[in-house]
Length: 116
Image 1: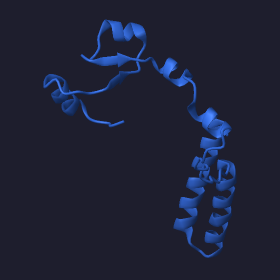
Image 2: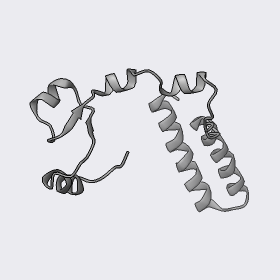
Image 3: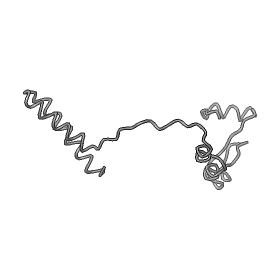
Image 4: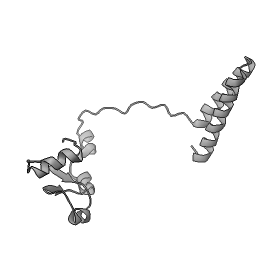
C-alpha cells in the first residue's frame, strides 16, 4: 500500500496510470461520487474480512508488544507539585513556590473537570 497526496493521485488518474485504489466510504457515498477506477470496500466490510489481527494472534504469529505507559493520576502529580512548592517555600524560593502552586491548582481543576 502506498500513501500519496491528492496531487500525485490526480496525475496518475488523469494519465490513466494503472493504480489500485480502495474507497472505504459507505456504498451510498461511493455511488454519489468517487474517483475513476476506485474500488468500493466500505470500512465495515474491510474490517470484517477473514483474518485480521485476532486471527493473526490466534495463529501465534509474532506481534510487537504494546509500549509500556505509566499512567499517573493527575491528582497525584498535583500533590507532588504541592510538596515541591512546600520545599521551595522552605528554601525561600517564593517565585518557584508560587509557580508550583499555580501548576498544582491547574492540575487539580483538570482532574476534577475530566474526572480521571
